[in-house]
View 1 (cartoon, rainbow, N blue to C red):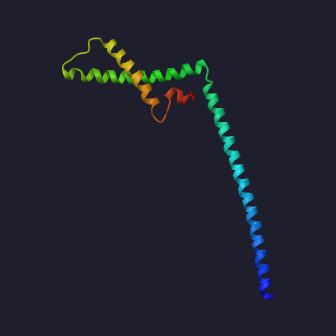
View 2 (view 1 turned 120 degrees about the vertical axis):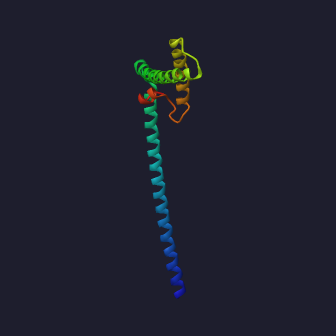
Length: 133
């Protein structure tokens, strides 16, 4: 008789444990579903921000490009002065200063844009500041 009572008690405990596990599983699924919905909402908001960044008008793009050209110009000036100071040490002299500067500007413009876009930044400084793609 005691064995039957013990068996009945054990069965009841197992049923309670099973019901508790079902409730916790349902709760886990609800939490997972809610967190999935949160992730989807965040992704939609990020997509909206990206679309807004893509829709930059002419003036915003112009200002961003002007910033990028200013960076390239500053780099060209630095390169020109380095070139101008190193050349006499080799026994040469800069005759056409404007021509050399234009060459330095073109080189710095092409290299600066290419190098910056290939880094982790992904865009140039002007585009990054104005959030343009």
